[in-house]
Image (cartoon, rainbow, N blue to C red; front, side, top):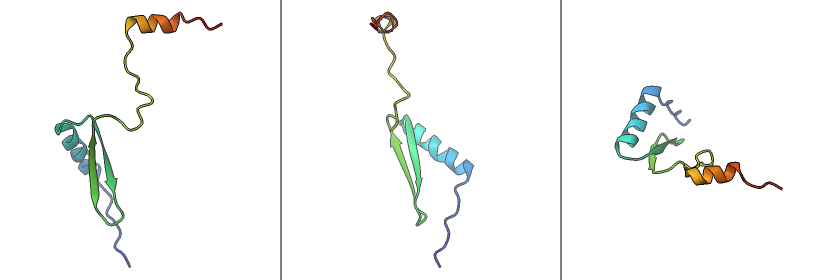
Length: 70
């Protein structure tokens, strides 16, 4: 029977994510594989960046507020 993978402790997760930030990445992923390997991936931008819109200039904000919807 295959040996079960040990769960990752919160303190380990925190240190891995801190290492990602210290390396200069904006975000990262921690992947636990079934065979026990841990994969740590640093990324410069989030994968699902739908909620993060780039900031708009004051003109773009005014234009959005005063757009003709008819």
